[in-house]
Image (tube, rainbow, N blue to C red; front, side, top):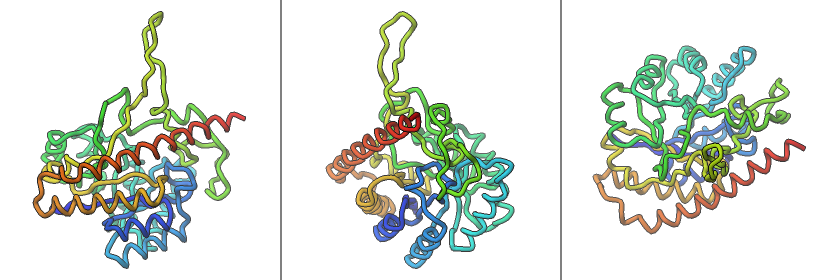
Length: 319
């Protein structure tokens, strides 16, 4: 089995860079329909152009519809998906189970990925989403080979993992998080085209403020508090690639639609080489250690800047 590389495209420039460096699949977020700030999303015209560029070079494009539709705009989600499919999108990344089933019914030949927002956590989840019509589930990046092998035995659904390994588990796991909604709602921007006045990240009104990555005080009443993050940062993965492929992972996802284009370009190039080496039988990727260390450093620095920006943005809405 040849594992595929799924790369972010927060702009047309990033889409071109990722495809040129060897991404098998791009994923893009439409304005107002994905859980990222509008500056990391793309217009319908840009998505159509990105799909054409990917297709012309043998790659595919997935559209991220990972926010939750209300009963009032559910049909709008389906209509958008039909448009993207007609424009060349080969699949969708979806959180809402109702939308997933609707897309399977309306676009039977599309590829449906279950988003991290669905909170996959056990073998029963894998079977449930397969029965609902999903082709691929994204696995928690705290899972290791044993858990991946268990899912592979339980279901024939496609398995996707982030290109992350976990340094420390922290207090929370990625997935169904609504903490940003409690921190701050904001007005929709006109360019996002929503009828709603306020919204949260899970409703598409941006942003995930990375609450889990800010410092919080923990401790018993009357005791000395300890300052920690709710969720520790994951770091870029490499050594696990051969074992994950052997265990049945068919797709590796690189996140970062909001990252600098140059960083995504370099990461796609790096992981393209590594995945190709695994496909050729490599079981030890240690010779990439120095390059990986440099990329990890860049990733952490950019992530820290992004968290600061988002927390400052949340505070600004108070005024």
